[in-house]
Length: 115
Image (cartoon, rainbow, N blue to C red; front, side, top):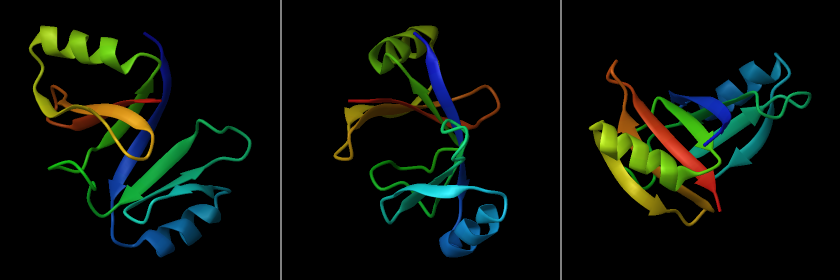
C-alpha cells in the first residue's frame, strides 16, 4: 500500500474567505461539492488543503485525509491493529471509497481511494 497524498481538513464556515486568503498564496480551487472545497497548488497538485463545515455522510468531520492506492488493504490493517474505526468502509457517490479511523492523538483520519 502506498500513500498518494495527505490533505489537512479545516472545519470552517468561511469557505469564500478561505478561497480568497489561500489564493493569495497561489492556491486554486480544485474541487467544490458545496459542503467541502479543496484548494491545490497548480505547480504541485498533491499540495492541497480542504475546508468543510461538516462531512456530508459521516458523523464527524475528519482532521485530515490520506489517499492510498489500496483503501481495502488499509482498512484491514487498521481493523486488525485494533484501531478505532470511526466511520465504516463505504463507497461514496462522489467517486471515493473511504473509512475514518482515530489516531493515537485523538485525530480523525479519512482514509480514501478513488474508484
